Length: 220
Image (cartoon, rainbow, N blue to C red; front, side, top):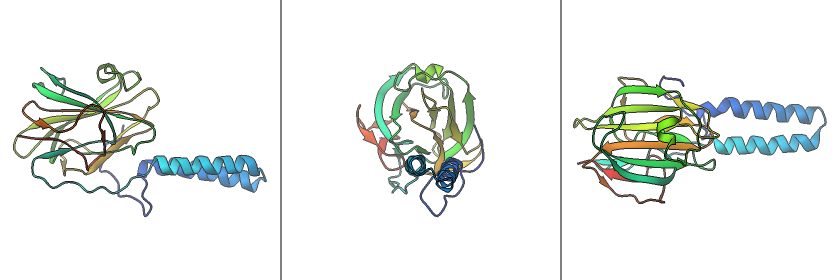
């Protein structure tokens, strides 16, 4: 896990943390062709293309409605439920969980403007992220954010069965804008969002969402 400001994108729309993987794959591809191994070279070339596609980082149009909370991740809604308490804000809340598969964009974004009060890294296991027990047992990294109006919410990156690398590029005390990039989880996983219990949720189970652009709820 790394903490610093999220780096600017390159001239191509890929996430900076993916550049080393792209460079490594491209180097192997070039070496194979130089050695005259055309068939393995073409195989490596298509792997390189897949890695470039996997680490894509498209621009998103962030809604400007004053009290809307946007999705922190691309994926599918797998949990919408009320919780009496949670380990990050210690409040009665609504939990929204998003499952990211390997085909989703993996860059994560801030749901709502605020100041990061805590960055909490918790080591753990690598259970399939589609299982709800992953929220409790898997490796995860949480941000606890306080909005300008005093609301407190938590957004949690959770590693999965295949995902073994959580990237978080923000720190305690940073002021973050709604929809701004802050990290990613490599190769599919899950994000949990813990929001105030009086929020008005506007997504349904099974709905597909996009980071930074799909509205999940409205804070009251």
